Image (cartoon, rainbow, N blue to C red; front, side, top):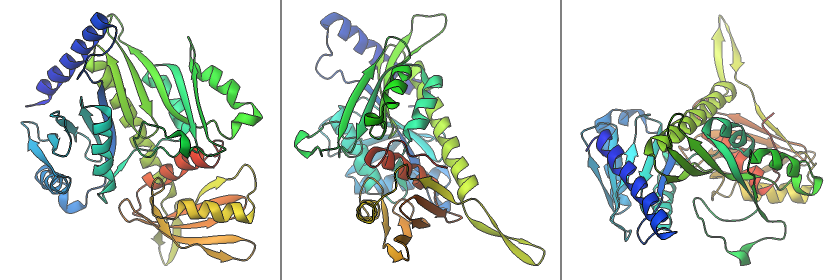
Length: 372
């Protein structure tokens, strides 16, 4: 097995799936859509080499009741989750040693469960998290945006597609906006309406990508947690889409780390700080009760924020939190008041924590929030 063989298998799966749909008017039993997950891996330095990555994978897959198979390509791995009913394997692409792509043709419920378990049970892995404003901007390079979906205050969980209506809160919102042209134009119109502005948080987009000079075309559904689901007749176009997205996400996280990691440098006989404090300003000032409620949801060690900390109240209803990111155990400090949230990243803390925080604040607090 190498990359060429993977390409042939997945491309063949997409082509046969499209033909099956055309013949039946629907997807036949077992003809699942191709899915790809973007996963961030922060493996310790003693596991950087390919052989060590293999050992790392064997360790985590054994804990997931699964297995890993080596291939002829040192950056391509085959994963098997024994707890699933399907016989489908997962193709893990570690061509970028930090930002991994996992391809699979298994049913959505099983693949979501497998990747979710892989991430939740490992300190060094996390999904990607893309703030709605970033996702909207990136669509220009991914394809033609035809359908956009907003999800606000709905506890669906990472990669969970089913929505339990009895768990909807009063302020929850689920809205799908389609257009024959660029759906972002209609989206902007709705987002400008005061009743919707706070709750219109972009969660997923359906884009159409074509290839110049040929009839090849795919339709892909992309979520803010880095999941791609594609239908069409070209794995090449699917690869282009996921590769562009991975590059965009990589730049986002690395820019956060370059700009917002706080450290000290020695200049002759004095120290001076490097890095900027990350700031998120609240559009509407929070009451003390609202602030306490927000702190309780952010620092409870649970999904989706994955942060642990004990808020300490200072004068003027200002809270200070020494926190730990449960992805990589990175350290960071928060100062939160009724008007703003300040984040001090440690010099080695993963920048993923900041985009994860902002993405989920947009989906559970206010879609208008931005990193200042």
